[in-house]
Amino acid sequence: MSVPELIRIVSRDSPMALAQVERVRSELAARYPALCTEVVPVRTTGDKWMGDLSQVEGKGAFTKEVDAALLAGEADLAVHCVKDIPADRPLPAGTTFAAFLERDDIRDALVHPDGLTLDELPAGTRIGTSSVRRVAQLAASHPELRCIPFRGNANRRLARLAGGEADALLLAVSGLRRIGRADAISDVLSTDVMCPPIGAGVLALQCREDDETTIDAVAALNHSDTYREITAERMFLHVLQGHCNSPIAGYATAHRNGDLSLRACVFTPDGKTVLNAHEWAGPLDPATLGTSVAVTLLRQGARELIDGIAH
Image 1 (cartoon, rainbow, N blue to C red):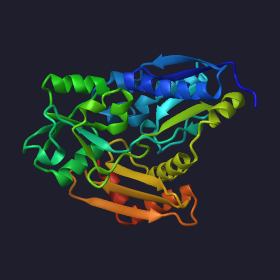
Image 2 (cartoon, rainbow, N blue to C red):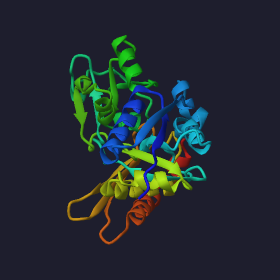
Image 3 (cartoon, helix red, strand yellow):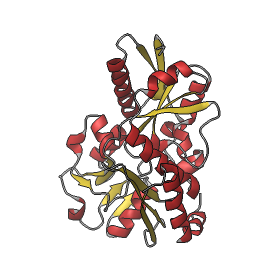
């Protein structure tokens, strides 16, 4: 296999995104000691805009500029959090996923300055989050708590928390670990309490379709179980055609015996309606499992629920 001399890696310019790039660089260096890598940081619309994401292309606001740099030939490889990549439409023409890295922790974490757990928070506690998924689930399980809009990268949110703009935060466990702030976690929430977003804890490596040399080199980093999980999850989300204001959650699990399962939920924003599905693949391939779970939820009324949410 021919390995390129240099791979230019484009990513968002947030501290967490750059930490994720360093993981990719490290894995590439371990496999190809002679390979040089170069980081191409870009500021995305989602990082600049602190308002409602539905006003700036939803989750695509975190990927548009990265995709543009890749397609323009300014970089050879893009690193994305899978949860930030829209699944209701195809990848930009001319690009493809070359690999998914082994999955990190998919759970959410509570950050409270005094170390309280979620169940210990007093009524009226202000929880900083702009995730409709988190807001809906908290409304269902802890209606006495109050969610307030909170945008910005994880470091910025932690600084705002320290400044008193909220009483606690909900952030991803994997994200806090990536920026070296696992010490801030006061409570790790089980997936039964807070079902994660589609693609949680996974980094996707994207290349131009015609760059076979880079694709072949990067494909060696692909984690097969993670690939199966993400294939099921993204097909599920694609069939549902959810938008950025849709409280949708779910995760697939590749089991030791080779089976694959997918649990997923769709909520109303107020958490008063929750649709659930949990299926095992058996002989089904990952994409078929994702489709099956989506169809199960559509039969429960997911289409009407999603279409009834303003976006």
